[in-house]
Image 1 (cartoon, one colour):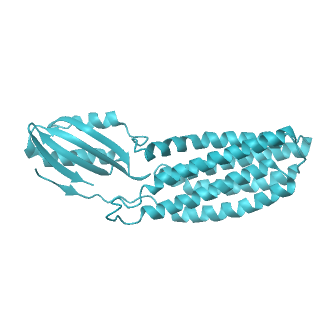
Image 2 (cartoon, one colour):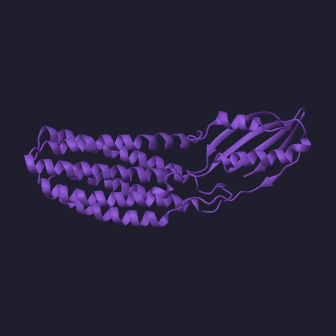
Image 3 (spheres, one colour):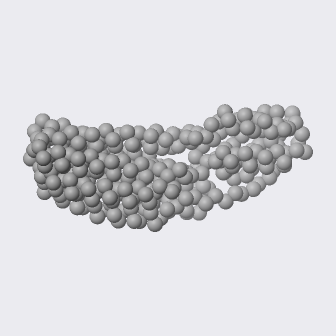
Length: 297
């Protein structure tokens, strides 16, 4: 049996500056929005502030996960703590869904017993939120397609900007018509938007936590692509899973016609898989009656 080992360095996307600025801006706004919500007895502002507080917690956890992902592997954790990025994305989704339950309960209570609120104050505070959330979403725009945590942060901030626009509209309506029931209705709409924006994050995070094939990777396409390489007869025992939200691993047994062609075939497979977004590959080569092992991670 003959073994080969190669290591590919993969630099994970780590937008530390975006996280720090986003956390600072949103923390300041949460304080202002909570104060205004309590002062005006506005469920729209309080629910939006609660959502924004959840986003602050999510940003802090995501930044912590990126820091943990940079920890070097040890004898006990041979991949380091890269998986923490997946666990944090799942935790963030759960936190948001818990917030949804609280908002819906409060909205029902306020809907049954509407309370007077100051529409103009609501509109002004929410208007500030539109600006804060839009700026934060922009900070994560360049990395939203590189990492699940970044995509989650971007989607949450973009959704928050839309939610804040809704609160602005409700504030204007209340100021002009005194229809106070609009406030709990907006709170309920906010909850629905959070569910919609969070569901995909929850589904994908749960999939990665269970070592499922990451979204965007087609296992059938991979099999077809590798099988098309000259000299390969069969590929089996194929497994694909996420090491982190940015790195994917694959193991497989590859049956080849000629053991002498193992090295060039190996490089062709690795090149194809790298193009498909798979960085860590472990292959075991086999011929009729003989097995060859090769690892590249």
